[in-house]
Length: 83
Image (cartoon, rainbow, N blue to C red; front, side, top):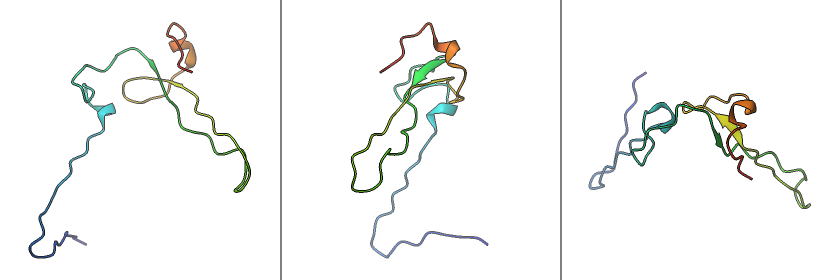
């Protein structure tokens, strides 16, 4: 089935174009993405406690390529690992 977006009469229409910078050859600043692996902040872990209790969440850096593919941490050993 075909779909369309309908705006109320008199309302302005705005279009937001999003791009995935991981698939582009440049980052948003226009700088080329590194061809070597680099450290990137990883995903946050789940909270270690249930609702109403104190808990902790951990974010571990990941060694990734410019396309976002996670690779072995050994490939990033020569780089300073972020805290």
